[in-house]
Image (cartoon, one colour):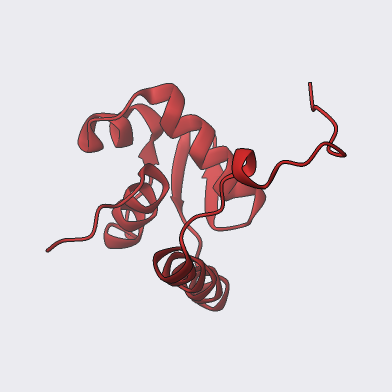
Length: 102
């Protein structure tokens, strides 16, 4: 059975598989059948982690292979842990001492 990918995984995989090109967020969204605003937000988060590069309106995967591999290993580790132990749900671990975040 194929593993379901989240939107971030789909975007990273798309950019990594087409690392010889740079793409506009709208084109990525169109190719992956996602909302452009969702793609833009994800790309911005990936840029903060230096996993993608951005110039004008174009995006591409980082050329820092070590950084990309480290991020992939980190992601895979957490995904395996979620699969083995179950995803943590904040509402399940909430205590009376926790403050609301607004």
